[in-house]
Length: 329
Ligand code: BMA
Image (cartoon, protein in one colour):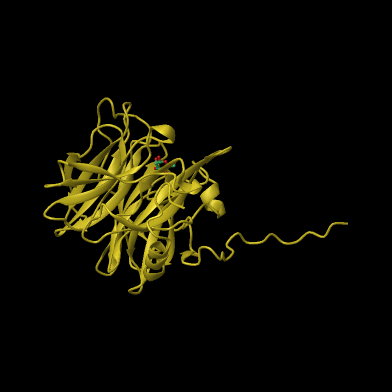
Protein backbone atom coordinates (compact mmCIF):
# COMPACT_ATOMS: atom_id res chain seq x y z
CA UNK A 1 0.00 0.00 0.00
CA UNK A 2 1.28 3.46 -0.87
CA UNK A 3 1.37 5.93 2.04
CA UNK A 4 -0.03 9.27 0.92
CA UNK A 5 1.77 12.35 2.17
CA UNK A 6 -0.19 15.55 2.87
CA UNK A 7 0.16 18.09 0.06
CA UNK A 8 3.05 20.49 0.57
CA UNK A 9 2.37 24.19 0.46
CA UNK A 10 3.63 25.84 -2.70
CA UNK A 11 4.66 28.84 -0.56
CA UNK A 12 8.04 27.35 0.13
CA UNK A 13 11.15 29.47 0.72
CA UNK A 14 13.44 29.64 -2.29
CA UNK A 15 17.14 30.30 -2.04
CA UNK A 16 17.16 32.39 -5.22
CA UNK A 17 14.41 34.86 -4.34
CA UNK A 18 14.53 35.62 -0.64
CA UNK A 19 13.28 39.19 -0.94
CA UNK A 20 9.68 38.95 -2.12
CA UNK A 21 6.94 37.75 0.22
CA UNK A 22 3.33 37.26 -0.76
CA UNK A 23 0.71 38.53 1.67
CA UNK A 24 -1.03 35.83 3.69
CA UNK A 25 -4.26 37.73 2.84
CA UNK A 26 -3.94 37.13 -0.90
CA UNK A 27 -5.88 37.59 -3.03
CA UNK A 28 -6.68 40.87 -1.27
CA UNK A 29 -9.40 42.01 -3.72
CA UNK A 30 -11.62 39.69 -5.74
CA UNK A 31 -14.97 39.97 -7.55
CA UNK A 32 -16.66 39.13 -4.23
CA UNK A 33 -15.51 42.51 -2.81
CA UNK A 34 -17.08 44.59 -5.60
CA UNK A 35 -20.09 46.80 -4.88
CA UNK A 36 -22.00 45.07 -7.70
CA UNK A 37 -22.18 41.62 -9.26
CA UNK A 38 -18.83 41.39 -10.97
CA UNK A 39 -16.67 39.10 -13.04
CA UNK A 40 -13.23 40.02 -11.74
CA UNK A 41 -10.71 42.75 -10.95
CA UNK A 42 -6.99 42.88 -11.66
CA UNK A 43 -3.96 44.99 -12.71
CA UNK A 44 -4.72 48.16 -10.76
CA UNK A 45 -2.50 51.16 -10.01
CA UNK A 46 -2.07 52.52 -6.48
CA UNK A 47 -0.28 55.38 -4.70
CA UNK A 48 0.32 56.34 -1.11
CA UNK A 49 -1.46 59.56 -0.10
CA UNK A 50 -0.45 60.34 3.48
CA UNK A 51 -1.50 57.43 5.67
CA UNK A 52 -3.75 55.94 3.01
CA UNK A 53 -3.18 53.85 -0.05
CA UNK A 54 -5.46 54.83 -2.89
CA UNK A 55 -6.07 52.43 -5.74
CA UNK A 56 -7.79 52.94 -9.08
CA UNK A 57 -9.43 49.55 -9.08
CA UNK A 58 -9.98 48.05 -12.49
CA UNK A 59 -12.94 45.67 -12.43
CA UNK A 60 -15.55 44.20 -14.74
CA UNK A 61 -19.24 43.82 -13.97
CA UNK A 62 -21.51 40.87 -14.73
CA UNK A 63 -21.99 42.12 -18.32
CA UNK A 64 -18.22 42.30 -18.69
CA UNK A 65 -18.30 46.11 -18.79
CA UNK A 66 -15.14 47.66 -17.31
CA UNK A 67 -15.18 50.12 -14.39
CA UNK A 68 -12.49 52.11 -12.62
CA UNK A 69 -13.46 52.50 -8.94
CA UNK A 70 -11.57 54.41 -6.26
CA UNK A 71 -10.53 52.11 -3.42
CA UNK A 72 -8.86 53.29 -0.19
CA UNK A 73 -6.95 51.41 2.48
CA UNK A 74 -5.25 52.24 5.76
CA UNK A 75 -3.24 49.02 6.04
CA UNK A 76 -2.64 48.29 2.35
CA UNK A 77 -4.58 45.03 2.63
CA UNK A 78 -8.22 45.87 3.31
CA UNK A 79 -9.76 48.34 0.86
CA UNK A 80 -12.99 50.32 0.98
CA UNK A 81 -14.24 50.34 -2.58
CA UNK A 82 -16.24 53.28 -3.96
CA UNK A 83 -19.21 52.82 -6.24
CA UNK A 84 -18.66 55.56 -8.84
CA UNK A 85 -16.79 54.63 -12.00
CA UNK A 86 -14.35 57.34 -13.11
CA UNK A 87 -13.87 56.26 -16.74
CA UNK A 88 -15.69 54.34 -19.44
CA UNK A 89 -14.50 53.15 -22.86
CA UNK A 90 -14.99 55.71 -25.68
CA UNK A 91 -18.45 55.28 -27.13
CA UNK A 92 -17.45 55.06 -30.77
CA UNK A 93 -15.60 52.97 -33.33
CA UNK A 94 -12.91 51.57 -33.06
CA UNK A 95 -13.20 51.43 -29.27
CA UNK A 96 -16.83 50.64 -28.47
CA UNK A 97 -17.48 47.11 -27.29
CA UNK A 98 -13.95 45.98 -28.03
CA UNK A 99 -11.96 43.51 -25.93
CA UNK A 100 -11.49 44.30 -22.26
CA UNK A 101 -12.45 47.96 -22.93
CA UNK A 102 -10.25 49.88 -20.49
CA UNK A 103 -7.65 48.21 -18.31
CA UNK A 104 -4.23 48.21 -16.61
CA UNK A 105 -4.30 51.41 -14.53
CA UNK A 106 -1.08 52.94 -13.18
CA UNK A 107 -0.75 56.05 -11.02
CA UNK A 108 2.08 58.56 -10.63
CA UNK A 109 2.06 61.49 -8.21
CA UNK A 110 3.77 64.51 -9.72
CA UNK A 111 3.59 68.31 -9.29
CA UNK A 112 0.68 68.03 -6.82
CA UNK A 113 -1.47 65.85 -9.10
CA UNK A 114 -2.04 62.13 -9.48
CA UNK A 115 -1.80 60.99 -13.09
CA UNK A 116 -3.61 57.79 -14.06
CA UNK A 117 -2.57 56.05 -17.27
CA UNK A 118 -4.57 53.17 -18.69
CA UNK A 119 -4.99 51.04 -21.78
CA UNK A 120 -7.94 51.44 -24.14
CA UNK A 121 -8.73 48.47 -26.40
CA UNK A 122 -9.74 49.06 -29.98
CA UNK A 123 -10.38 47.10 -33.13
CA UNK A 124 -7.19 48.67 -34.50
CA UNK A 125 -4.97 48.04 -31.46
CA UNK A 126 -4.69 49.46 -27.97
CA UNK A 127 -3.85 53.04 -26.95
CA UNK A 128 -2.92 54.79 -23.71
CA UNK A 129 -5.10 57.48 -22.17
CA UNK A 130 -4.41 59.86 -19.28
CA UNK A 131 -6.52 61.15 -16.39
CA UNK A 132 -5.46 63.83 -13.89
CA UNK A 133 -6.80 64.29 -10.39
CA UNK A 134 -5.74 66.31 -7.37
CA UNK A 135 -7.89 64.49 -4.83
CA UNK A 136 -9.41 61.32 -6.34
CA UNK A 137 -12.77 63.13 -6.11
CA UNK A 138 -12.85 65.00 -9.43
CA UNK A 139 -11.05 63.92 -12.58
CA UNK A 140 -9.85 65.52 -15.82
CA UNK A 141 -9.69 63.34 -18.90
CA UNK A 142 -6.57 64.48 -20.78
CA UNK A 143 -7.23 62.19 -23.76
CA UNK A 144 -4.98 59.81 -25.65
CA UNK A 145 -1.23 60.13 -25.23
CA UNK A 146 -0.08 57.48 -27.71
CA UNK A 147 -0.95 56.38 -31.21
CA UNK A 148 -2.52 52.98 -31.87
CA UNK A 149 -0.82 49.83 -30.61
CA UNK A 150 0.78 50.91 -27.37
CA UNK A 151 0.37 49.56 -23.89
CA UNK A 152 1.94 49.51 -20.45
CA UNK A 153 2.76 53.15 -19.89
CA UNK A 154 4.26 54.32 -16.58
CA UNK A 155 5.22 57.93 -15.86
CA UNK A 156 8.25 58.87 -13.72
CA UNK A 157 7.38 60.91 -10.59
CA UNK A 158 10.00 63.52 -11.56
CA UNK A 159 11.10 65.61 -14.55
CA UNK A 160 14.51 65.29 -16.24
CA UNK A 161 16.00 68.53 -17.59
CA UNK A 162 12.52 70.04 -17.63
CA UNK A 163 10.87 67.11 -19.42
CA UNK A 164 8.44 64.49 -18.14
CA UNK A 165 9.49 60.90 -18.83
CA UNK A 166 7.67 57.62 -19.27
CA UNK A 167 8.39 53.97 -19.96
CA UNK A 168 6.17 52.21 -22.44
CA UNK A 169 5.86 49.18 -24.59
CA UNK A 170 4.64 49.49 -28.14
CA UNK A 171 2.53 46.37 -28.56
CA UNK A 172 4.01 43.28 -30.10
CA UNK A 173 5.67 40.08 -29.08
CA UNK A 174 7.73 37.30 -30.58
CA UNK A 175 9.81 38.65 -33.45
CA UNK A 176 7.72 41.81 -33.87
CA UNK A 177 8.51 43.75 -30.71
CA UNK A 178 7.83 43.46 -27.03
CA UNK A 179 10.61 45.75 -25.73
CA UNK A 180 10.55 48.67 -23.29
CA UNK A 181 11.07 52.22 -24.59
CA UNK A 182 11.66 55.57 -22.87
CA UNK A 183 10.03 58.80 -24.09
CA UNK A 184 10.01 62.44 -22.96
CA UNK A 185 7.39 65.18 -23.01
CA UNK A 186 7.16 68.89 -22.20
CA UNK A 187 3.52 68.63 -21.10
CA UNK A 188 2.55 64.94 -20.56
CA UNK A 189 0.47 65.05 -23.77
CA UNK A 190 3.00 65.26 -26.63
CA UNK A 191 5.74 62.63 -26.37
CA UNK A 192 8.98 62.10 -28.29
CA UNK A 193 12.76 61.64 -28.07
CA UNK A 194 11.78 57.95 -27.91
CA UNK A 195 14.58 55.44 -27.38
CA UNK A 196 14.92 51.74 -26.71
CA UNK A 197 15.57 51.13 -23.02
CA UNK A 198 15.56 47.35 -22.55
CA UNK A 199 15.03 44.47 -24.94
CA UNK A 200 13.28 41.28 -24.08
CA UNK A 201 15.18 38.01 -24.09
CA UNK A 202 18.08 38.80 -21.82
CA UNK A 203 16.86 35.70 -19.96
CA UNK A 204 14.47 32.92 -20.99
CA UNK A 205 11.84 33.93 -18.43
CA UNK A 206 11.44 37.23 -20.31
CA UNK A 207 11.97 35.95 -23.84
CA UNK A 208 8.55 36.62 -25.38
CA UNK A 209 7.93 40.23 -24.32
CA UNK A 210 8.57 42.63 -21.48
CA UNK A 211 6.69 45.72 -20.32
CA UNK A 212 6.95 48.30 -17.55
CA UNK A 213 4.91 47.28 -14.52
CA UNK A 214 4.91 49.75 -11.64
CA UNK A 215 5.84 53.43 -12.04
CA UNK A 216 9.55 53.88 -11.16
CA UNK A 217 10.46 54.26 -7.49
CA UNK A 218 13.24 56.73 -6.63
CA UNK A 219 15.99 55.26 -4.42
CA UNK A 220 19.41 56.70 -3.53
CA UNK A 221 21.03 54.21 -5.92
CA UNK A 222 18.74 54.75 -8.90
CA UNK A 223 15.20 54.34 -10.23
CA UNK A 224 13.82 50.97 -9.27
CA UNK A 225 11.50 49.60 -11.96
CA UNK A 226 9.40 46.46 -11.59
CA UNK A 227 8.39 45.05 -14.95
CA UNK A 228 6.71 42.00 -16.40
CA UNK A 229 8.58 39.48 -18.51
CA UNK A 230 6.84 36.71 -20.42
CA UNK A 231 7.92 33.39 -21.75
CA UNK A 232 6.00 31.25 -24.21
CA UNK A 233 5.74 27.55 -23.54
CA UNK A 234 3.68 24.58 -24.64
CA UNK A 235 0.69 25.74 -22.60
CA UNK A 236 0.57 29.44 -23.43
CA UNK A 237 2.36 32.51 -22.09
CA UNK A 238 3.57 32.84 -18.51
CA UNK A 239 3.76 36.37 -17.03
CA UNK A 240 6.60 36.80 -14.53
CA UNK A 241 7.99 39.88 -12.74
CA UNK A 242 11.52 41.27 -12.85
CA UNK A 243 13.37 44.31 -11.51
CA UNK A 244 15.86 46.77 -12.95
CA UNK A 245 17.62 49.91 -11.78
CA UNK A 246 18.02 53.04 -13.94
CA UNK A 247 20.48 55.89 -13.49
CA UNK A 248 19.04 58.66 -11.30
CA UNK A 249 20.06 61.54 -13.59
CA UNK A 250 19.76 59.72 -16.92
CA UNK A 251 17.00 57.09 -16.89
CA UNK A 252 18.04 55.83 -20.32
CA UNK A 253 20.91 53.99 -18.62
CA UNK A 254 20.16 50.56 -17.15
CA UNK A 255 22.70 50.28 -14.31
CA UNK A 256 21.46 47.01 -12.87
CA UNK A 257 18.95 44.28 -13.59
CA UNK A 258 18.05 41.07 -11.84
CA UNK A 259 19.15 38.01 -13.78
CA UNK A 260 16.62 35.81 -12.03
CA UNK A 261 12.91 36.38 -12.07
CA UNK A 262 11.74 38.34 -9.02
CA UNK A 263 8.41 36.56 -8.96
CA UNK A 264 6.58 34.00 -11.06
CA UNK A 265 3.20 32.28 -10.81
CA UNK A 266 3.28 29.77 -7.97
CA UNK A 267 0.06 30.06 -6.02
CA UNK A 268 -3.28 28.62 -7.03
CA UNK A 269 -4.81 32.10 -7.41
CA UNK A 270 -2.06 32.93 -9.93
CA UNK A 271 -2.80 29.80 -11.96
CA UNK A 272 -6.58 29.63 -11.79
CA UNK A 273 -8.56 32.43 -13.43
CA UNK A 274 -9.42 34.19 -16.66
CA UNK A 275 -5.84 34.04 -17.89
CA UNK A 276 -3.88 31.44 -15.94
CA UNK A 277 -0.21 31.80 -14.97
CA UNK A 278 -0.07 35.58 -14.69
CA UNK A 279 1.59 37.80 -12.08
CA UNK A 280 1.39 41.39 -13.33
CA UNK A 281 2.82 44.16 -11.07
CA UNK A 282 1.17 47.56 -11.46
CA UNK A 283 2.15 49.50 -8.32
CA UNK A 284 5.05 49.76 -5.88
CA UNK A 285 4.31 52.06 -2.95
CA UNK A 286 5.96 52.84 0.38
CA UNK A 287 5.17 50.09 2.88
CA UNK A 288 5.16 50.04 6.67
CA UNK A 289 8.78 51.13 7.10
CA UNK A 290 11.44 52.97 5.10
CA UNK A 291 12.90 49.87 3.46
CA UNK A 292 9.62 48.18 2.57
CA UNK A 293 7.71 48.33 -0.70
CA UNK A 294 4.14 47.16 -1.11
CA UNK A 295 3.90 45.62 -4.56
CA UNK A 296 0.39 45.30 -5.98
CA UNK A 297 -0.08 42.84 -8.79
CA UNK A 298 -2.86 41.24 -10.77
CA UNK A 299 -3.14 37.46 -10.48
CA UNK A 300 -4.45 35.35 -13.39
CA UNK A 301 -6.44 38.36 -14.70
CA UNK A 302 -8.90 37.66 -11.89
CA UNK A 303 -7.83 39.22 -8.59
CA UNK A 304 -5.50 41.74 -6.96
CA UNK A 305 -2.67 40.62 -4.72
CA UNK A 306 -0.02 42.13 -2.49
CA UNK A 307 3.62 41.20 -1.97
CA UNK A 308 6.23 42.98 0.13
CA UNK A 309 9.85 43.45 -0.75
CA UNK A 310 12.93 45.05 0.79
CA UNK A 311 14.03 48.03 -1.31
CA UNK A 312 17.68 47.71 -0.30
CA UNK A 313 17.77 43.97 -1.05
CA UNK A 314 16.28 44.55 -4.48
CA UNK A 315 18.67 47.42 -5.27
CA UNK A 316 21.66 45.37 -4.12
CA UNK A 317 20.58 42.43 -6.23
CA UNK A 318 20.15 44.59 -9.34
CA UNK A 319 23.56 46.21 -8.84
CA UNK A 320 25.27 42.89 -8.11
CA UNK A 321 23.86 41.38 -11.31
CA UNK A 322 24.91 44.42 -13.39
CA UNK A 323 23.23 45.70 -16.54
CA UNK A 324 22.76 42.12 -17.83
CA UNK A 325 22.03 43.24 -21.37
CA UNK A 326 21.33 41.00 -24.39
CA UNK A 327 24.45 39.19 -25.50
CA UNK A 328 26.11 39.58 -22.10
CA UNK A 329 26.62 36.47 -20.01
C1 BMA B 1 -1.55 41.79 -21.12
C2 BMA B 1 -2.50 42.80 -20.53
C3 BMA B 1 -2.79 42.52 -19.08
C4 BMA B 1 -3.02 41.05 -18.83
C5 BMA B 1 -2.04 40.17 -19.55
C6 BMA B 1 -2.36 38.70 -19.41
O1 BMA B 1 -1.42 41.95 -22.50
O2 BMA B 1 -3.65 42.75 -21.26
O3 BMA B 1 -3.96 43.20 -18.70
O4 BMA B 1 -2.86 40.80 -17.44
O5 BMA B 1 -2.03 40.51 -20.90
O6 BMA B 1 -3.63 38.44 -19.94
